[in-house]
Image 1 (cartoon, each protein chain N blue to C red):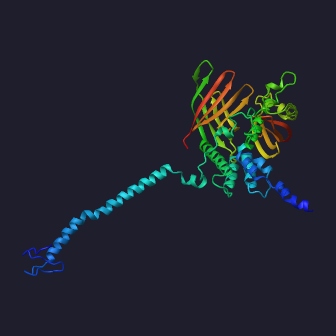
Image 2 (cartoon, each protein chain N blue to C red; image 1 turned 60 degrees about the vertical axis):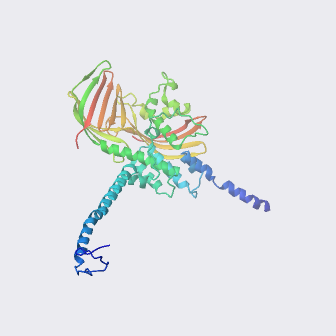
Image 3 (cartoon, rainbow over the protein chains, first blue to last red; image 1 turned 135 degrees about the vertical axis):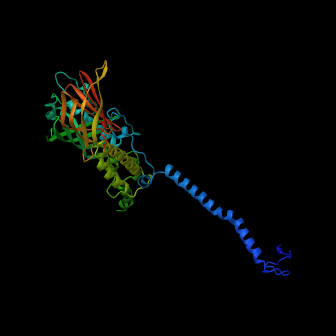
Length: 232
Length: 209
């Protein structure tokens, strides 16, 4: 219970002056208010400290989200977080002619395209074939195709054969896959192929080619080629 | 007539494409087979056709076309975990990474050091000149190399040359008695002339842009 600061008479809560000595209670109230405000001082700081703490936690959370979570670009364009293909899957790092397939592991459509693309790399060597001196087995092309295809290619690649012993031998330049379809077990691939036949610009031979590729036992094989020179 | 009516549902079942089989072919990345065995009305026909186009572009190294077709596939109403969509995203990411590499490598290169490797010994020699590399606008890994007094002081090289690079950013150009190979690594270019006398190797670095 509060008492009058002057005479010690007990005070009621609503008293503005002491009932005994009439000493104003307001002075004491003021004192108490000011002391109360002083004592409440540290309490008022708590919300600030609290806010700073919460702010730090939020910052930490945002920081760790930024660091560990997928980027916005990944989330939008790559929601299931797919990884890029390994280079060996789509380039010519791995040879295609000795790949074997089975019912459980059939060739993918890209395997067929890769197979044809790697075959075109063998063409500059194929055109150096000499009936007198060479056997087919020494040419990489024979591993991709039938003997019939090898022979037909040798005769239809005359433009390249003519420059095969020049200082700069022909090299594959571009291969463009124009059409690709399959009917049953047969794949039909149409390409436009450019071969470079010199060091300067515009020295090219271009062919429009139609390949027929089959799964022969357990590996791919080119069984027919129709090649037509379309420009030089 | 009655018999025909009874058999009609079986005929219809026979004519309907086997969606399980098509789905199986899509999961095995056999897109031409999925196209072959579906009709244009089938839900998965359009994605399979686009995947065939996408793989044709990838096999031709037409990287800009790869990006365009892959984005078309990603806009189709397919599940996020759909194998067709995932394959398209994986191919787009591969092409995108390579396109960024190609853009970074377009620069002029100066000789950092040049080495003659005879097979028995290695010695430095004074190589000179610069090479400017520009990749084609169609983004199909064809680079134009412009030589500015490049090579040996008494036999320097001028002019341009078109070189088709592989996706690993290397290329080999055969000569009658040897081979020239090019290889980018980060921001450096290594040009090797290999012939009967050994290898002349030029280690080149990018000029600051």
